[in-house]
Image 1: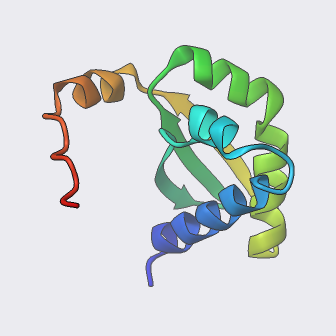
Image 2 (image 1 turned 60 degrees about the vertical axis):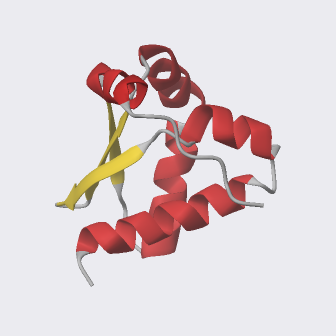
Length: 102
């Protein structure tokens, strides 16, 4: 399994742990658009599509995300959160998903 895949699994565990302290709506609002780009030299590189969300996450949640990654991986990890507004533009250009069959 590649390191990036391990990081993605750990990220899902971190998000599940957030449910202990915040409602699902808050988790969806702030964290659902974060993408893991790479994991190299103990640095998890993540990106998000909104400058506003980027600033809030960096100020309010980044320390917890780093702590949780470090705890789950068993060594100190730095999280580098970037903002890529192009992601938002690509998201807007995607066709809407079909409604699920009932």
